[in-house]
Image 1 (cartoon, rainbow, N blue to C red):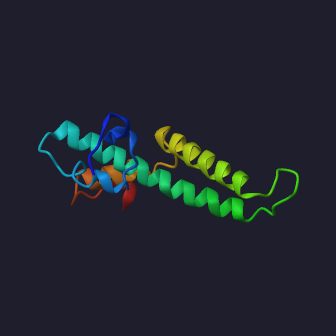
Image 2 (cartoon, rainbow, N blue to C red):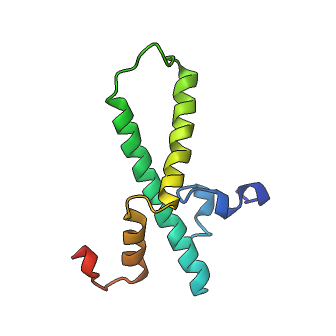
Length: 113
């Protein structure tokens, strides 16, 4: 599957199967670091999305906000964008911790002991 301008690697989530080749190390340290940061940020976004979905599932549904498939789809899309923005803004620090550990394998960081 080829990537076009509309689906450039920058706009795709890290788990998209079309990125398999583009996530491999290229030898360019800056580009590889950017890809690793993006992948860590997307992973934090997925985690936050799962957390938010689990939290929403604990709240009883009411008739006030509507209780139909369209509402669920819109809520899911909103949650996806919300968690992407949360991760991009620093989120819980999970992406930073993952990046720190993955960019320097074998190094024990004081924050993760």
